[in-house]
Structure formats: C-alpha cells, structure tokens
Length: 601
Image: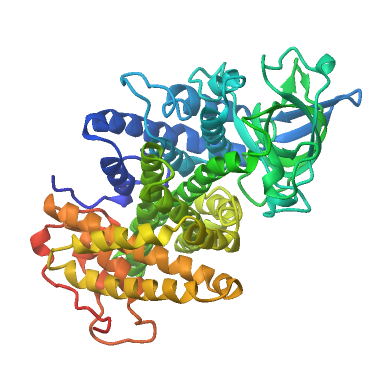
C-alpha cells in the first residue's frame, strides 16, 4: 500500500506522539521479525506500547532525569540500610513496562492471546522502543531479561522462585535483575576478579534461602553495579582452591535483601554519572553477603557469557533508539524551523544530512536485528551451527559500531536543533549525555574487536560468514541494485583477502588490525542486508529501501571524499528525500537512474 511522506511538521517535539507510528524503520523490523500468524498481535502490542511511551513514559523520564535516584546507605542510627530512593514516576514506568506490556515475561511465558512465548528478538524490539523514552531504565529491563536467560539455561531448579520473579507480569511479584562483574583491578579483564565465595555455615543461612540451593558468603568489592538494588543480581566470584583467571570463576545470585534485612553488603556510593541517570550505578562491598550458586562451580564465566551476548545486543538496541529518537527530533525541527524564507528541510544541505542520518539509522537497525535473528536461530539449531558462529561474530560488531554511530548521530541531531539542542529540557541534550556510555557498557571498542578475532579463530566464524554474504549478493537481480551489489562484491573481495592475510600473521599484527577488520565486516554485511531487504521490497512492489541501500553504498564504498563534480546529486531530489527521510513509498519502476559502479573491475 502506497504511503505519503510523513509530515514531521505536525509535531512540536519528539514526544506526545506514538513512537510506533513515527518509526517505519522499526515497523519494518517487526514485519520481518514475527511469523505471519503473530503479526497482527505484534502490531497491536507495539502500537499500544509506542503510544504510552510517547505520551507518558517519555515525560516521566524527563522528570526522573531531573530527580535521579539517591542512595541512603545508613539509617539515623548508623545501621546499614542500602536504601535507594526513586522518583515516584519510576514506579509508574516500571509498572507499564513489566506489568502492562510484559517485557520480561513474554519471551519466557505465553502472553495473553498466544499459545507460545515469543523469541528473544521480541524483547529486544520492546527494549528498542523503551529506549526511545528512557535509555537508563532500559538497562535494568535488559538485565532482568538477561538474568532470566541465564537461570532458564543453567539453573537446575533451586532458583526457580527467582526466575519466576524476574519473568512475572504482576508488578507486585516482579523483581529486577542486575550483573555485577567489574572490579577496580580488573575492568574488562574479568579473570582478574578477586571477590571470594566461601561456603556458608548452615546455621547462619537465612530463612529466605531457596531449598536445595548451594549457599555461599561473598567477600570483596564490585566497582560498577548498575541497578545496584536489583533483587535478582548475578555476580562472579572465586570459590576456595579455584583456578586463576576466568576458568576459576563461579556465578552466584545475590539478593538485595534476605529476611527483610540488607544482605551482608554495603552500598558505598552511587556514581555521579554524565548520563543514564535513571538507573542507579554504584559500588558494593560484600561483607559476607548470602549468595546462591548458579549451576556448577567454576563455570560462571561461560554462564555469564550468555547474559553478556544478550546485553551487548541490548546495548546495540539502545544505540539504535538513541539514533532514532534524536533523528525524530531533528526531522521535527527541520520541518518547523524557518530560516532565510523557508523551512530548513527544503534546503539541499539539510536534506543531504537528514537522508544520510536516516541511512545510518536503517543500517544500524538492520545489522542489530540480524544479529538478534541469528541468536534466535542459535536457540533452535545449537552451538554447532552457522547461526551460532555468525551470532558470535556479529554481536560484538553490532555493539561496537552502533554505539559509535549513536554518539555521532545524537551529536549532529543536537546541532540541527541549534542552541536549544544543547539546553536541558530538550531531548537531544539528555540523549547526547546518555549515548556517551554506549561505547563503554559491555566492553569498549578495542575489547569488542578482540572478541571478533576470537570468534574467527576459535569458532571458525569465517567459514560461515563467507557463504552467508555470497548467497545474499547472488540473490540480487533488480537492475537498480545489481551495480550496487557489484560494488559490495568488490569490498567483499577485500574482506576475504584481509581474512586470508591476517591468518598468516602473528597475533600482535592481528590485534593491530582488529578494529579495521570489524569495520569492514560491518560495512559488507550491512550492505548485503540492505540489498537483500531492498530486493524483497521491490518484489513486493516497494522501492524505497533500494534508495536506502544506494545511500549506504554511496557513503561506505565510494571514495569521493575529495571529489566535487557535476554528477553526485543523490539526496537533492524530492523522490530521495521524501522516500528515505520521510518514508514515502517509491515505485520500483521509478528507480530509473541506475547507479553506475565505481569500483575497479
């Protein structure tokens, strides 16, 4: 069905609107994500969620950002209480998210109106919309799902009550998760963790301790604990006589309270952060905290890797949201702001910027949700599958690249808003602060790039990557797309040669080139995904995504950074601007100006 260009001038701000309605990019994700039998349910659910996010949760998030959580470590008598005080609107946002929309419920239990739970990708898409309103709150929501994934996979029964709490859709029974990894001396080097886990004296175990659980006491400190008071927190520690490094770490569930009292720990302080103020991040000193072993001892790092994969994808989803929400703000401003006699979206340079920002948004979204699709496939096909190897390769790249794109795009959206964009109370100011953590959470870019090398070396990911890309390129057949596919094919050849060259080099040189390699994989895979989607859309009678794919190839594979001539006018035309930036339908027959390949034959 043909669609007219979105009239962003109908909005005053990037709020008081339905985020589902104003984001056809994420609507397209839903169309590809859910089976046909679930699409009507998903559209209703996501539209209702987008409505309450845009009209209630987003405004609550602004209030919470002005009034962030406060920690009261001690009561008036000097006794430890570890009480975190929240703005009341935080509880409204939580009730909406967990109770009304079942964010952490519906991927583990069948939601109302369905017979089966949904895939993990559903939770990620819900989190993407939630991040449109509050990047900080998405952190505990994500860790709640992540902790539930770990317990579902590796707990053999003793922690079932915690699993049910993490996945409850009754707010009064719901608990939130957390992930306590970082220690001062270790940082990203988790194997350097020093927190100790000693078997608990049975006489001292609380009445709350689950029956049949192996109970330990934790001693040590954790330096970055987001959602510090989560009742379903997971922490890594080393049992007596365990091996050094990551191989000797065990995983424990550490409640915030036991028997209604603080659980053998002191919350020393909350971090005075630049952004994501709605989630309390602090320092914990364990002084014999009661903790319950998850699964088997000395397998904690393997277990936590499952949560880390999900959290990295969640980080990518939050990056997608940061781009999407601030891009919406920029488009609204460009449609409303008059300068020199016209609204600024009518000027060629602004059109070019908005088209390129939209292409970035489409690219980040396509790559992130392809990694999510592969995670779902891995659940069905197991660890000895192409899906697992591709997932292991694409997830760290998704987190690395989308985070950098979020920082760049939120910065430019702020520029589009001008001075107001830099002022507290405007969405770009808050999201610009929030976005700065995205390259840091769940591993900075260097750590992620090294993980890409591990996926290639240990998992043999290249053996799955090469036929995966080639099959997608071979399926491109529309005359507008074929020259684009030729350019991507040339870059794919560069990637294959690079993989072959690194295979013959020493480890130091591979590390030196790791980030460049991750960048090239992102660009090649994203281009093939956009071409594949464009071909599918053309087959269904819609040509818009062909322009998106062309825009991506223009900015990634054509070395025109120093060339100014009479030929390049891609983003100037109404067809391209309305089609890409304003989501108007484009007839495939209108794709008459077939792009000429510039790569060397």
